[in-house]
Image (cartoon, rainbow, N blue to C red; front, side, top):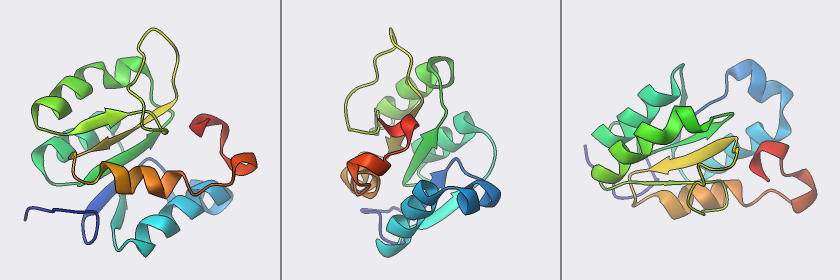
Length: 130
């Protein structure tokens, strides 16, 4: 199935259910995805999740605690497949500096995924999203 938007599409998240229950920001992200009728899915392997986006099996992936060595090759794969990889504010990743995560999408759903993150009040944005 080809997804043309976030609605109905599976979106990878980096959290286990235990982490979600302890984190109001993760719970808010999942709630926002569900409100947009996306289907949050969680399992191990950030590179695998990103490759599922490239293959069209996921419409996107919001990954926390990712590092440059996690994403360098992934970004090439995603871009070659027509997708996008940015930081949590929609800016290109800067591999010369440390970062803690990324939004990875099929390109079509990227703005919707960013909107799910940007709903956090400024004083409640988790450190990894700043």
